[in-house]
Amino acid sequence: MATAHEYPRYADRIVVDPGIMVGKPVVKGTRIPVELVLRRLAIDLNLETLFEDYPRLNLDDVKACIEYAQALVAGEEIFPSPAPTEPGRTSPTP
Picture 1 (cartoon, rainbow, N blue to C red):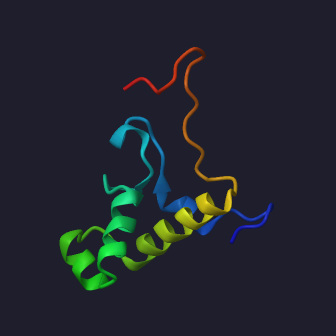
Picture 2: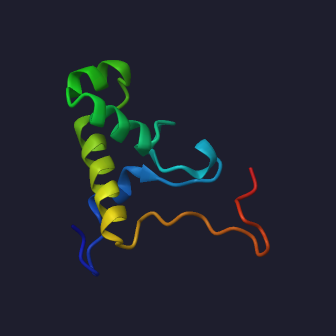
Picture 3: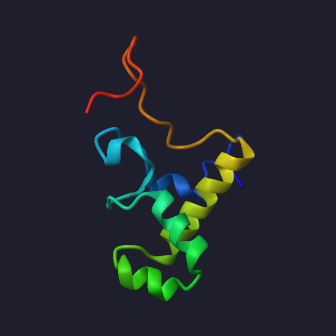
């Protein structure tokens, strides 16, 4: 868990960019959403199966997804922050 002066470990592995997967948090360098990783783990905790289906993922990516979700549930400030939208817009421009 990150303190006020500590940058969370997941921050280097999770990206939120409106130009990638409509701004969903994804594993950096991939188009694999955090949500997909968590959904797969909820169904099957076998990491070998996950890595066979998504060979670009590694253990540190999975840990980052879990830590990111934990921070969301705990109501902590999330890094990286989503990109701001233009005034008057409800969603980022594609």
